[in-house]
Length: 210
Image (cartoon, rainbow, N blue to C red):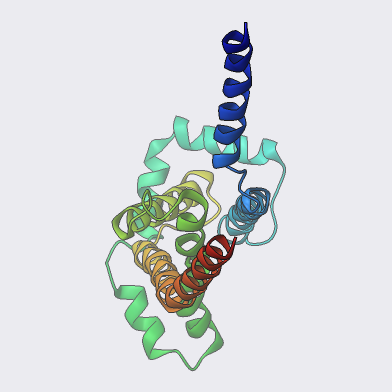
């Protein structure tokens, strides 16, 4: 009887030991809040990006864009005509002109504006999706894809022109934003590692004193 009574007691002790060996991470809720905040910032950024590039801070009714899209589907020759007459398909053509006119407000905005507009994309993608799943090449491809989608939408909706130099500058902006994040990460990493080592040393000292 005595040996039988000791079995549940030993199991309960081992259960408490196992439960205590893996304490809940006190920073988990903070990390989740930061993650949700980054996702919200990313969504707001995408909305602002579409608003600026596609609708130029304005916009019309959804019915208008639906009619424009229907016209593009029904008359694809109009798209080809706009590509031939109103679009820039020569790489570096507009970029070279903007570089020569950097002193003018329009040249300055056209050159640096396309870069600055996509820098947050390259900055936020690794923070939201993780650095391991978002290397530089993937950021480059996503930046190019988003820019291509916006340029194509302008063409299909008849609300802008297609410019291959915008693709180049926007993609460069995404990669530049990623590079800035990497530099900040490399700068902050030694300080974080030092703090973690100091915290680990204090924990070991406390456990030895006990």
